[in-house]
Structures are given as C-alpha cells and as structure tokens.
Image (cartoon, rainbow, N blue to C red):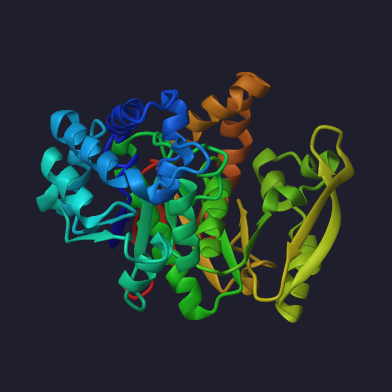
Length: 416
C-alpha cells in the first residue's frame, strides 16, 4: 500500500523549533511575544497563512517569511527531533512492503532540511511539497495513480481535508497539533507513532474489503461472529472506510431485533431457546432487508425492544439513501431467513476463551460476575450449535482473525 505521511506534527516534533523561530522573529521586529499554544495553533497551514496569524494587521507576512525561514532552519539543525518511535515506525512499514511518501505543505528545501537533520531521508520513496500547488489535496490528487490503494496519515484538519478531496482513507495522528474534534471524521486514530503501524494493518483489512464490495457492487454486507468478536466496531469502521472513498454506508445491528424475554426463555434447554428464539430475524428480513433489496434505499423508523424494560419503546431510524451499502452485524446471522440477502459475508474469527476474557472486561462491571455463567450456560453452547449447523466461517467471503482488535488479519478472501 502507498502511505502518504504529513511531516510536521506527524513524524517531526515541529513545535519547539517553530516556537523558537516565531519568538525570535517577533523579538527582532519589536512585536509582542505570543504563547507557544497561540503560535502552534497555526501549524499545518501554508507558510504565509501561518505567519499572518502571528503578525499584527497590516504587516505583510511575505516581508518576513525569509527571516522566519532562516530562524526556523537554524532551530531545526540545532535541536530538531522526531516523535519517539517515528523512525522505528517508518523502518517497520518499509520492511512490511509499504511504499512511503512525504506529502507536506512545507517547501522542498524545508523538507530536505528536516529529513537530513533527523536522519530519515533514505526511508521514503518520494518527498513531495505542496508549496507550488493550490493545496495539499491538489498535490495528493496529482500523485495518486488510478486504482491505487493509498492512505494519508496526518495530524490536522488540513490533512483530513486533503484525504477527503481525494477520497482516500485518513489516519489521524492525535498526538500532533490538530484538535480531537476536527479529526473526529477520520477512519482510524493513533495516539502515538508506534500505534500507526497497527492502524495501517487495520486499514489494509478494511481497504481490501471495501474494494471487494465495490468490485461486486455489493449492496447488503453481513458481519458475523460470536459474542464479543468486535462486530459492531468492525462494521462501523468499515462504514467509515466506505464513506472515505465516496460510498455511502449505513450499519444495522442485529441486536435491535431481540424478541421479548418470555419468548427468549421458552423451553427447558437454555441454549436451544436462545438459538431459536433470541432474535426476530423474520422482522429484520421483512422490514429492512427485503425493502432495501427491492428499492435500493430505505428511510424508516422502527420501534424495537428495550432490553431493560422488555417493552417495544426504543426508536431506531435507518436512513440509507439510494446507492448506499447496508452493513448488517450480529450473532447467528448467516442462516435462514437472512442468508439469501447477503451479497458479501464477513466472518470475524475469535475463540471462546477470548470471548470470555472480553466479556469479563465489558459486561461484568455492568452486570456482575453472574453474566459469565450465562455465557457458559446459554450463549456459548447456542453459538457452538450455530457454528456447527450453519458453518458460517466456511461460507464467508472474508474470514478475519480478530483476536487482537488492533491487528486484525485476513485469513481468507475472494481469489486467495
């Protein structure tokens, strides 16, 4: 995969050098000093726009740009450094076979100074400056080849906007200089350079699935696995990846179609009762999947069961416009009457030991230790029967090992 890295705030810890240069510039011109936070709030912008934020109204930023550059380059050569773990990240990504590029608003001269000062100039297949382009997005658009699988990794809304305009996924480096709010639409998030390697591994899985959805023109995609296998998170992240490439996507949760408690508890065999009666999958097929298959869109509000009150008083709204992909996630999913509706099936493979470990972390604080007994007595036996009767793994298009949320791995995919 081709990985485009922003430099400042993503790999290079720009703040100390920029703050030193800015304070030196203000002092030379007899201007009031600014706080480091005020200075760094403009990072990521083109240089003239950044300087305009430092200077008083009426002062031309172009008149001081040369001197600012001198001061900044002196600071970089003297004390410039990467974020901890950034060099190791780049080396490991190269070893994994990825093509690495810098895509930055900094000038070509500035980029070379930073790369030489930090000793990483030999780790990139390309170093690209947006200084002679209308925007970083315009540069990125010129660099992308048709059909190329690519990601942009950056730390500000300007990086996010560049990825959005080119319709490629974006990984937000939240340790940089952007705010968490402005980075919220990103596909994935990293809180340190060392986390980026895991996010790239995740992205490879979601990009491969997104490409297959487009290749097949799949409209209804199922995400199945045992309890606590990460279905909800997986489906929501897949939706963000599809949206990043310009494909609208909506997520439907199988848990929204629980039957009332009395029906779920029918019979002497707890596991069998759960397997046969836990969900009203006929309603899911009748009210969601069938009309969406027919019309290609669905805007609907449903009253669903509230598990706490055991009453149909929880409203959910599905707003899937024409051309959307419907991602349906849930347990016990790949069987009649739902099975014929899925154009693509994804099975998340997680063992029952890992299920119980996650259940202890997720459910015990809310429901007490007794919930683990319910898993062993009811849910796991029921899902074991489901796996044996319906073989959802062997029938899936993608099988993804999701034992580690941060490092999903495709075990099987179409054509391989």
